[in-house]
Length: 315
Image (cartoon, rainbow, N blue to C red; front, side, top):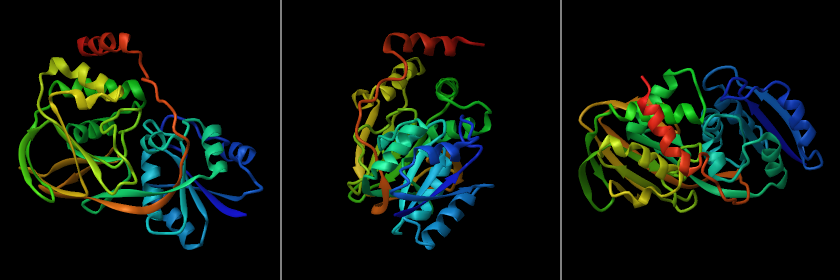
């Protein structure tokens, strides 16, 4: 029998968590696991609870919440023997989607019952850990605006991206790789350990969490009339075909920009200085993962452009 601890964020994402522990108990394989439940009460509390669970020798620690809860719990389990798992209840659920974990509680518990474990990479931006993506430029700016807004969910993300994108001004960055230095103007620079931001928005479709490398996506300045096309390519895994997009890989980079400003770490906005070091740490944590499935575009292609133009045309 394995000890399993569920760390529940009662206010994460878009779903109510009432009676979720009862539902987990109903679906969990109790011949395999001995469960316990903890509730996070403030920012950083989930990290503390997970760190204590690992110190107590708990076999599996489960984040029940959104991307912020996932980051807090997973970062506490880095370089420990405890295995990380997730029941996604957020608005983006990037790590869960990348690792083929269903975005429904029953399906996620089924994955936990199956118990397939992989040894995965994570990254750091400065001293902040990330498991999916981090970045500077427009995606950090949107994360900041998204956090300031009250609405969550897929369409809120699309609307915020389109509205802010037409006004955003690109910056000039110096990027130091292991073997070269690049200087260029960029709309955004995304460093991806996993393939997507969340909501099946694939900023780095070929990214792997097991290769010791981050996939770096640089989107160069483009005419705002092309914004719906860029967003559509994000959701159809075809961003690499855009002439304004450059993709490469590295285990570590240094980004230098003219002034301090916003960054994002797994979608959470932060402020950092002019010089930012980003690094991948190979095979540093264990996670229960699902079976690969085919992800479908959340909005049919034939209606996507109409929706984008309707949002852009609102006053």
